[in-house]
Length: 123
Image (cartoon, rainbow, N blue to C red; front, side):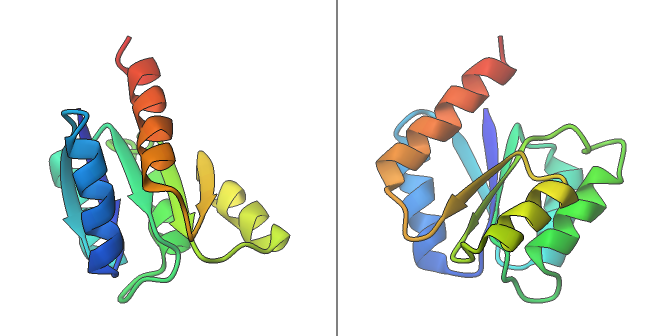
């Protein structure tokens, strides 16, 4: 199983990577929205973990692009962001996000949440 982490904070990316790799999950990453969209298309991950506030392209715009592309439109996308206002959450779901997690977060709980989703996908 493969997860794409799109976040411009290398500490967040590394924390997620370490916890997922403990579960045997391959992690690939991008530090901006534009590269993240391209990686999603070329690597076809099982799940995408996307920050909102990214350089070159926001996470919301990236979600919209991915949802409009038939080759990657069905990949689950979990937002992982510091934005926690109700209208932000609504906007993310309207764009096509499947889940919304706010920072700060518990990395072990996040890994469990992602593992549960991946297990359901790969049944």
